[in-house]
Length: 344
Image (cartoon, rainbow, N blue to C red; front, side):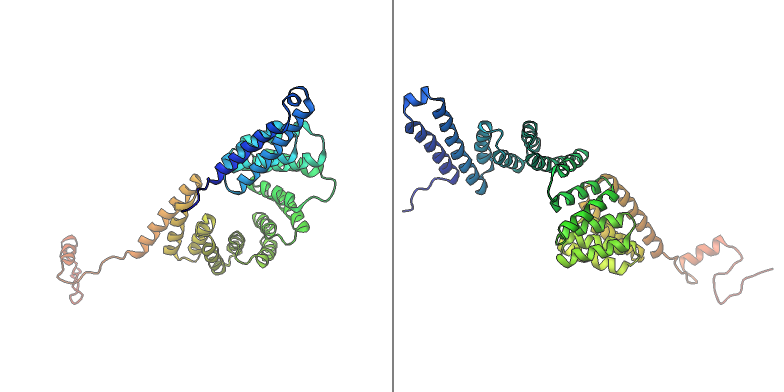
């Protein structure tokens, strides 16, 4: 017979209740009533128990239960950085981004410690990015960088470069991506963003050099392969671009940008049927309605072009129905190649 086992969530809840009841029994009734210090100690112990159980629940994937317990700890300790960070990250895991942002902002309003503020501003910037509030993300991360007295972590510069790239501010993206690779030269993502920024500025040769660093670190990285394909396409090296985009799509079959430029590279090679196939795949996965509509128009034009090339006028033979119609429409002109026309 198998022993009865409580579900992990129920076990954690039982442990939490046991801790609270145990604390009640541990302190004498009179002490609990008359001693504010004992009450404070009791709350502190409850907070620690809840905090540990919330962390355990989080590692087990019980996000709702973990978030509820951590929320209770947060209400008792709203100025504790570790509690704030864990609670906000649990809220992010539940996709409650606005709530997580409020948690960071409340502590920001209370603390003057520059190191703590730098961390909170960085986390806030990431949330602003997730919420597609990029100007606020840039402002928050720039303020965070300015607060750091020691060496700025490369990931701060990397994310700032990415934020600027999303707003098509590619010179700013290049500057911060360059700082990122100086701090963290082993970061494939930083080299990729630098290469992409160079390419968007029309500096394709510099972009090509940068993307080689990224691919040396991660040869099968789909994003880096996509960037290399983009650079090769704009350098007019269409065969290499096609090969590179095929490699990118083998790593990530749903990469819309690779499908798009694979189709454009095929079009540049006048391989129109393959271009249409790649562009139709792009239309299926694209989440940009405006660009999708433009590509649908291009597909229609390419199909019309293919149809025009495929059509040729039929050849008629003497005595055929077409020949008879031609004889009726062109009196005096013979369609028999062996008979000379009657020309006066």
